[in-house]
Image (tube, rainbow, N blue to C red):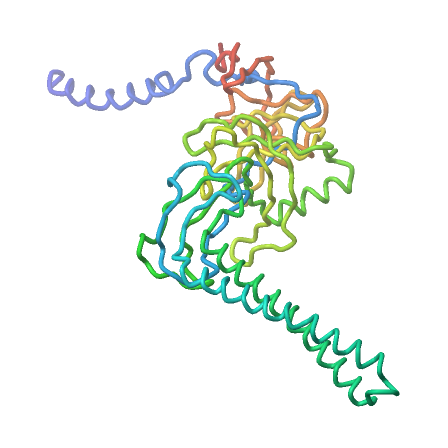
Length: 393
């Protein structure tokens, strides 16, 4: 009987033992439930400073001078007098047109002038004689008639002189010259082609490459912002705009540009305003039509240089950072940026001098969390040095 009760007693005792063991198993290890200390974060103290206000603008090179060469008389091309791709000077001959008919026109005009010049003295002499004999041997009508003939003879001379000048000019135009100095392009005609006076198609182009214009495109909204900053005294414009050009291969063009003028209109398609600069181009690296990037220093402004790694841009475009309050707690701030410089945001509003901005240990931060700020440094590449130890170390 006693032997048969032993298993039953063991079955009843086992749940009781498990219940007694549960509180022991569920007890937290020593120190696990104790509150953790302040989190260590890497911070930098920012001070306002004078920085350059830069704008990075797209642009395109434009020829300083670009002449389309067209004939001013009609005829057959007999010679092409230049080498494409070579520098030519203003007045250099480029094409020659058959001049036979124009030479004949000059001869005819000279003969007509000679006839008019020969007839003029006779007419003037007759008019003078009639004037002398008026009242004795000639009537008033005769005087007036001879004077009219003399005036007509003088007009004939003037007309013949003008015709000769025009004929000589047409003959001179059979040699087509360049109106500017520059690089001559490829001819669009061959010897034997018929060209006509003032035709639409150019025979060639001559382009002056040194100096050269560069048109940079600034959004109109940004220009308005810059003007507002100047009016409020936030931006101090320099006496001269400093411009640096970067070519498509990433190289920088030697030499700065000189402002020519801004456009007086805004593009209806892009919303930008053209600003034209002139650059020296002695090595002819800049060619018309080439895409460029211009960095323009528009002035100087007092701002905080905030490392971009410390800031977050929200969906609504707001720029925010975490700072350590004087009480040693985490707080998020919304800032107003006016641009960027290298790896930094330029902050105009939202920070105070010497404020501790968190740049390391940002993961998991929450508003009001207790912090231990550890000063760190950040190099020019945006890399944090002397990083704050991880939390709990």
